[in-house]
Amino acid sequence: MPSSYAAAAAGSSSRKPNRTSSAAAPTLRPPAPSPSPAPAPLAVNPSVISDSDPSSYSSSSADEADFAASDSATASVVSAYLSVAGEGADLSKVGIFLSSAARRRSPPCLICFDPIRPSDPVWSCSSSCFAILHLPCIQSWAHQSASGPAVPCPTWGCPKCRFAYPKSEIPSSYVCFCSKTIDPAPDPWILPHSCGDVCGRRLDANLDSGCEHTCLLLCHPGPCPPCPAVVPKATCFCGVHREPRRCAHQRYSCGGKCNKRLSCGLHHCPVDCHDGPCPPCAVLGSHKCECGEILEEKLCSERIFQCKRECGGMLDCGKHKCERGCHGGKCGECPLRGRRTCPCGKKNYPRLECDAEAATCGSTCEKVLGCGRHRCPERCHRGPCDGTCRLVVTKACRCGGLKKEVPCYQELTCERKCQRLRNCGRHACKRRCCAGDCPPCSETCDKKLRCGNHKCLSPCHRGACSPCPLMKTISCACGKTCFEVEFGSLWD
Image (cartoon, rainbow, N blue to C red; front, side):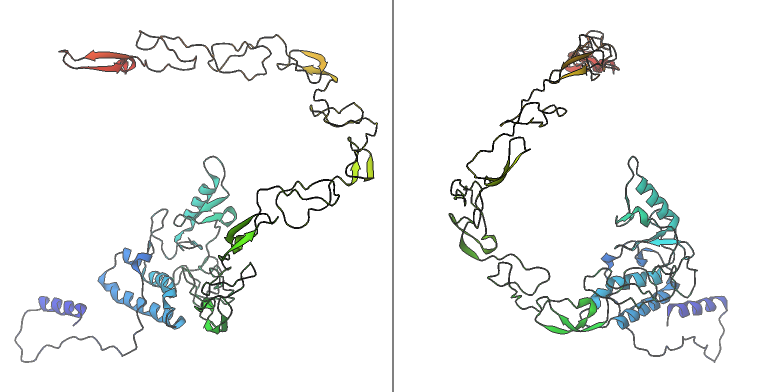
């Protein structure tokens, strides 16, 4: 007899006095349930459930039947959606969210810790944790995270998984889980915060299989299940085998050797059928450097290498040697042959032998000098220009107190002493022609310390001096125990 009926029978017997009767008291029995095939229970890993775990919230014994019915319905929906052997484990996370949504009553918000009621506007993380939070709480959280204490931040993170959202994705309205309905009205016959329509989200949101199908479940929290559609001819990674497979698992390994031609063009991939590019060729062999002078044992993928020698080959002019490092192919044309210019670059010599020197043009050089403001006044010449610009200009000294005409390369200073205070606030700078970047004070502080016996030996500074660092031996009243302390600690 179930516990509820036993309790009812016990309560009625305690309220009525015992009577002797030849007729036996009728026994209350629950109606026999109609036989129906029980769906296979959904395998749920308890370690996966975090704050969305319904078992973390206490429930009365009267709700156990409802919980069992919701779990049975969830398992039935999941097994009917994807009932292929070996692929049912892919629905464990979806089943957890569906079962949790059916069981929960008022889970707490992770920001304010208040219960989330079916009528409260919420926001759901769409990255990986799918946490459900109060809409006002996440809006305040996002604005505070994006503003930052000092420098504004371009992103804000989910309070649970810390996924970074851009500022443009700060939630502004209350939408259902599938984002099709704004301000979904609470309905006791559908999941809270759901619109009740077909989800319709793309199933390839977290896959790279190229699936173009949509979710057929009703608007639900958490991730969408893997695509159950069947692809008639799914190709393995190496492209040899084809077989019918589920759309979510159409990319698979056949277990045979990949055997694709490697990038070296000489050997084939020895790895089992795999996703992505093949590894570099690992066949060992003896290979020459690009100039052909050095022979080394290297991997086939590293067979093209350069030695540290200079090429030294003869250029096509027959007069100069190649100054490049180790290289393949011909050394090329002589860079000194053909079109060249005079030293200042104003006159062109279109046909000049590589061993002939370009003549000067006789005009003014006009290359920019080292000062960066004036140009070379000499005639076209070979070699660098004179580094000292001798053009007379009007300059101001560093402190701005004197202006005078001097050669451009010469620095102008005056004899005026700076009267600005240094960082100590007591002594003047007194440097000659100071530009305003006064150095720290180099004087000694020399103030009397708190101990009254010594003076501060630190550089002149602002504020109070440090405690006296000198040591003093003190003893207890009887004189048996002695130890050394700093003079400054006697006053602290």
